[in-house]
Length: 306
Image (tube, rainbow, N blue to C red):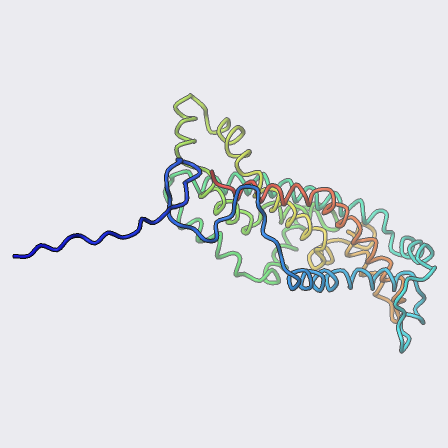
């Protein structure tokens, strides 16, 4: 019987593993440490188009707010800002009592945001990491409330607020939105992945109670998700019009309700309306400029696993 000699093949050179120092699988597209992806010309063109399309409505608001109504409604609308911006802003400020409306909107939006972050984080932690009977059914009921149109709850909610004596008061806008089903679901999904059970068990072994665990472990871990939820909640509360329009009156409005008064006349002045819209947009821009970098940084720090 003849024996065949084994066939010798050339060894395959493997790229060194940066963690263990030994060889790892071949990689043709692995990037070195500190390297960044570079976009081509198409990426820059696409970003420029998207950025221009996003800024165009804001720019047109500025143009319309600095012109007269005849210029805004002309067959050939202007493309450059005019010189009546200060005058139109003053007119809108006086007609709609925007000073009081801005203060009311800040109170309402800030209170709703802080309460939503607090309660939704606690509820999300309970649904994500605590064991209790009926947890699944309760979470299903919370998610099911997202399918109910808000218009269906207007009549009973209005009767409830009137019964409490909060008709026309800011409490009637703040109280129904202290907790959101979306916020509970959002925080639960984040804490399921970001908060390991071992960390909670180690804290319990060290003698920490639930309050200490939430303060020292849950809140720091949930900070990236809380920043995102806080931004979404603040913007939604600031721009809310439907329920505040029904619950408040003209003497105690939020900003969106006050802006509705500018366009409630038979022939509203579009330049004045745009001036009021510009005033309502500026606080959101300031909030995004101040906290936007922190929010993006929080998202990235929460996404990195190591």
